[in-house]
Image (tube, rainbow over all chains, first blue to last red; front, side, top):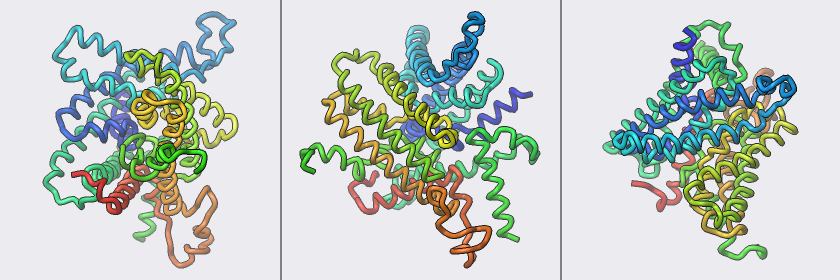
Length: 238
Length: 214
């Protein structure tokens, strides 16, 4: 049950693009055509599904305060968490390189469709963001970490697919010249993000007890603000 | 600017407007949008990026002849990660509350495309002094947008600037609130950041027709 909950939460409520704005650079740069958007989206799902669990293991057995206790009691006081940025990014960069080599060797056709996107991914904030959110939200087990990685990847895939489809069609519309290209893409993404905010109540189902537990994270805060605004609006209507 | 030659000065001033990293080069959007609900957070983020990009550009530029091109991305990432760890530890030591607000976004400076973009496009091919100026210039261009967005979002969203109420007290109904003004809570939410940046792009391109895409 908690797997399903986390899965849907990471796709819709904490959507990488619409609620935390991660991976915006490649999201804006590669969304001109649906076919390339699908390629990059698939690569992101793939890499997130590998790196999040891997970084979970690193975090659990190397970086957290007291994580080294499996080496012996004298290591139990070590706290290496200040190294997490450098360890995570090194894992991601090497994994991306490894995946590239393996895919090139065993599946040239997949390499042809994914290959050019893989180097782009090492510097995609969604990938590092996935690992950092996994760490800051203290996800409990390896299985949940994998679910979180796959879910966030699918969320990102959905977002880039949607914007690419809209951008292909928007060519036929009469956009003010100064807004063409980048400007209108920003505004559309903003409107889509407003749309995605309506998923906010999906899992809690209006259950007020659930929300305050996780006020630590950025996105839950937005959900709370969301409620405040709704309350304000209702006040306005009254 | 007696200290800088004309060409050097251009390295700093160009990214402020006509070659702005956010509105023209489309780099480093993620953090620009996520943390601009408050002016203070935007300012700290801007300063952090100026530090990381300025120093990082110099380091990469000094090493440009000894980095093998195949593994350059990993080398660049390690350099940025080391600098970002410094920023993160300084923030945690001197501004703990603020570092909680910024949460993972300090870490995400590592993958901020502005930094990798400038390393690739400039620092790998130019000397340290020029790279330093380029880094500072681009980070300033980034910071300017961040501060503009932060200013409008905080002013209209919560009626404060740097946490100080400037439009009166919404509860006691003083200042603007006395005549029926309400805070627009929507401005604090993430989607409005996108729309504000969209509007900045719109205004900039209306003023400078050469930037319009087709």
